Amino acid sequence: MEVPEFIEPTGPTHRLQSDATPLQYFLLMFPLTLIQVIVDNTNLYARQSGAQGWVDTTIGEMKAFLGLQILMGIVQLPRYTMYWSSDKYIGNAGFQETMTLKRFEKISRYFHLNDNTTQGPRGTQGFDSVHKIRPVLDATRTTFKSEMNPPQQQSIDEGMIKYKGRFFARQYMPSKPVKRGLKIFYIDVAGRNITTEWDILLWDCEKRLWGLS
Image (cartoon, rainbow, N blue to C red; front, side, top):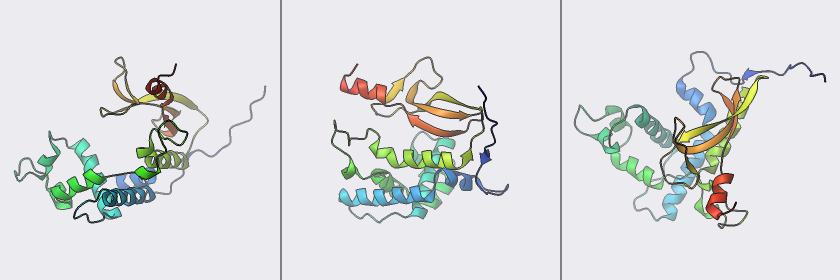
């Protein structure tokens, strides 16, 4: 059997310069079009819920909100309200200058990625187990693939996304470094911690949910 020589282009497809910021790289994977979807669905859900005094959020404000969420994972405090503490040794001036605590809580309350009314009935083919986060899954799977031409050496691997919330697909694997979370399968690009394709394992969990063997 003769295997043809691998001549496909490889490597990143972006045109960012060497001095590009982390935010520019983040937006390659998490584009403004996706943030606009979040803005639209957050505003929609607020109106559907009859939110009193709601002021529509914008792309700029949503970028700031997501940035604060990321920073909370880096600069960790016991309670989120402490970032807005008046105590100079506890409060974070950057958070306080970005938005008020009241506005942060308001956006958190109505934050939505998808329109609840488009979910199909449970037990039908139109039902999507990950409907609430589907826009993020679809968008990032597209950008991960478009921003990298993979090399010849690739492998299929499995991993865990750490998650302790309530979700039927959450798994407990005591022998793994990440014991509780969502199990995913992904294409590992030559062992460089880069993936061009991934998906959440739902089938086994759905079988358990519906009592199937």
